View 1 (cartoon, helix red, strand yellow):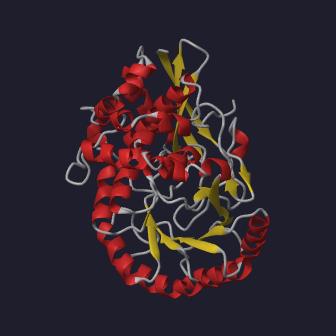
View 2 (cartoon, helix red, strand yellow):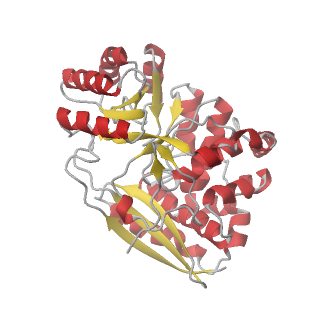
Length: 407
């Protein structure tokens, strides 16, 4: 199956009042820069990169530049040694200067890479999770670029890690029957009133969710403390409550407010300070009595490596539509496994792709079966939206990565 041409589209979606808001991004417009790989058949590879609207057109233009050399390539030949192609795109000698490995170019790379994996799975007539599980350790590592990680993770080490987990897969394959538990982010958006947070929390519990997330980072810390007490009181002591500051605090602010928020026994505090501040996160992680999660805005494997080396994250929130696509997501998942840090992705794709990736992470890499974020706001725009029953992601059955958008 040969890639004949590439189509790019700029898709932006209306949000309900207050939906998607956080302390830093107060008026978001959920958007995708979409890469479509056209073939000599009816099949198309769909790749997504997530933005908040402004600048989405820049990512689309960068997709055109990065994808040019994919034309006339056979998908099986391309993916047989995709790590080489990935590295060549990431290190494009002209475009690399406006990265490297971050920003508009990295987002465009995510869309191109994700389209390749989607087409590969569709061409083999399997869901993405099964495609990944069907690969041998060597074949999977062939799709990755481990450069700049060698002091922590070599090719041989990656293959050995996957081989070790391959031999115990049966003990973890039960997740294919039970599904993967979700946590609901949509109950606690920043611009929701207290009354709406209460209402949404009650609805989520009725739908079977036992884990929920509240946005914090208010100019008035008392507002955060009040709302945290509120959601804990409504959800009950048995519920798992995540808190997310979306980078709003300085390190001193974070140290002060995080200690006070500890009264509700949160599962984690997410992005408590600037996403590039490795040592700031390290300082916070050492000082508080609960966990630090971050990664939503970490752009590449190198900075993830630094966070892991510094013990600055307790949960890795790598996002396949934020870093360089599925290939880099899997690379970072392997690196996190080596450091013993669980991967709980941020879902800029609304969980469509990540519902496949967490299955592979658990079965294929031996990562813990914990939670996958659930954000429902774009369900109506996907051809095959993720199915959630009693708070649990159901096993995706359609071919590909579940990324197809309706016209």
